[in-house]
Image (cartoon, rainbow, N blue to C red; front, side, top):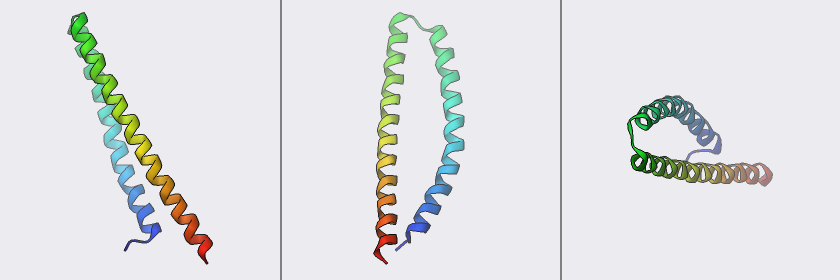
Length: 84
């Protein structure tokens, strides 16, 4: 079983790699959205906004899930450090 410090390290390394890819995706997504919105009519723009809103909602849910997992990890660290 992994120790808490191994878990922290692997999560930190994974996040570093993901953050770079996510930043690139954010830039690409925003550029694509701008190009699309220039070529769309009113109804199509509304559909695009619905897609963007749904994506943002998914992102919020993921952020909450990540916070919850990190909070649990913090509680585990506190519990282990106070156990001794």
